[in-house]
Length: 198
Image (cartoon, rainbow, N blue to C red; front, side, top):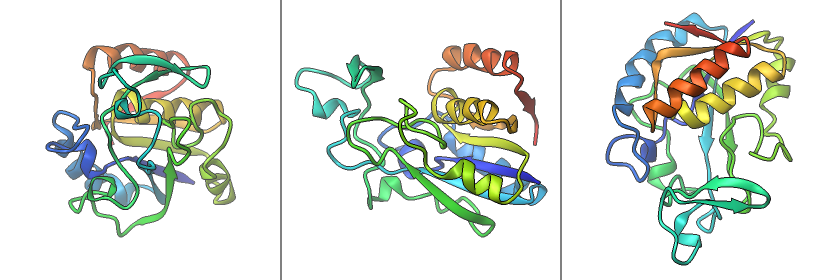
């Protein structure tokens, strides 16, 4: 069974959003086109409380993209984004959601960030995604969405570590930092991941 994992195609990660990914809208037609090629489609959704500690606004004197230590982990500080029940947290209306069977929310604990669709950044709690996929007899996953260098990458790497054959759909991702993604992309392939076109 093959599953498509659609990562964080939310208003705040799209142009004009609070944490916009350049060319983010360009992934949506690709995702909508490849949905039919998979037996199962699931999605992830950043779902932060308004006081999330990964927000620069939670730290006096800090600015977005500063790096601090948070709970023993290195943490990039972000603009406030994907706040629970806000328009910015909603999946884009341009995304065809009819085949999405389940949505896995992440980043709900105000004290720790969660890039991966499987775990928080400290791997202290899981989202239930791995169990859901295993219960559906999924053996391979393809990951797409935003942003390539953070939530897509960490979801894909965790997929590999959990034993799923894992691919990133290259035309269906965009990065915050293209240079940073080039390094992570190489690490993904060296770990056994695949880069595919659909």
